[in-house]
Length: 218
Image (cartoon, rainbow, N blue to C red; front, top):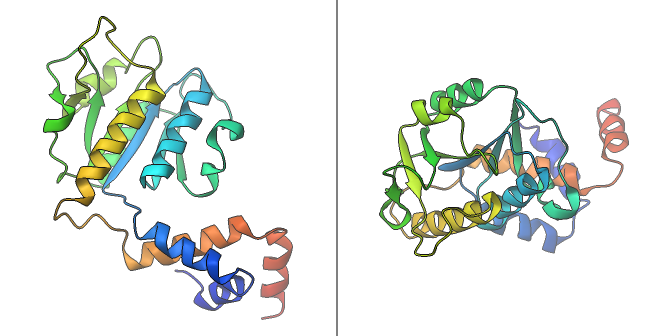
């Protein structure tokens, strides 16, 4: 439960333009779709995927670090880590189970199966899109447990794209079609309030000291 008085206190430190910007961005955020990346060795690719999620309005990115544990490349993410929620998982099974419990269908992105073409994908279904390693693609666990498969139509000699490029193309296309649909894809009022508080805290310098002082005075 968000402390609304604390939120109001923090937002007094923000400019009117910043608060308006937060609200405008949040009106275009969605949890109807989410993205998961599995054991991406070159972590700047994960950072680039995060940036695409932020730019096109996907609020949550799920990162499985079963084999490679690395930090977000902030230069590639370009600040996106402040605005996108990062859920980290140690195993792919835990990630898939958690997302299914939240009502997502698991969609494996792969060019090698009899996959659904991007423009044919049904955007009305709550979906989690999984992207795999640069060389090996998605693990057998994901491929076996996936509820569906998705691919980008290609007409050249190359069989695949870099993960960050694939994610950007898929996210842009699907979020654009989602916003043109009749699906209720927006964040709930409670989710918007939660993000307002989190983003205010991520914006204000020395927030830990300010927070400690605020609650000590209550």
